[in-house]
Image (cartoon, rainbow, N blue to C red; front, side):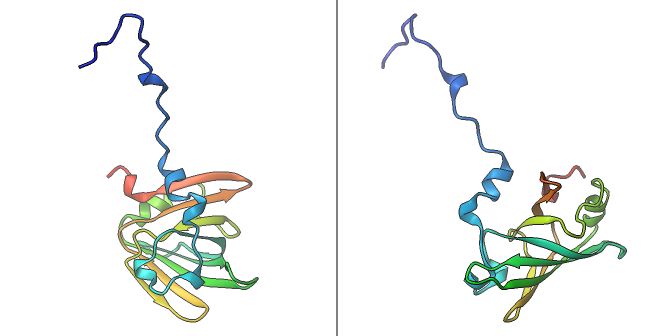
Length: 150
């Protein structure tokens, strides 16, 4: 066993900082495309796109149309995102419009409860929680509803 000498310096405070969860989830290598996924319910990564419609007036539900970028062409993929459950109220109260029309969004596919997949459209349903990062006026905002205080 090697002993520590008096002149040895303890560099434990110089360890690399742990990545925050936003950078872990939305690392560019996890950016996915509708064209690359055969089963949305088991998909990994996230979609990048823009919100073009929001329905927030339904109790315990938040629905938005999400237009995701395609990796193979200039086409866009239209995805209906449905957030369902009592946890949605937390999201609605989290600040000025959790998700608004024209927000740029990175939507994690983690937590998809069910998915319907057609040729160019899909419907994703999140019943337990959702993780996304939005960009409004160039400012990022990270949301992870599983980390909410109950």
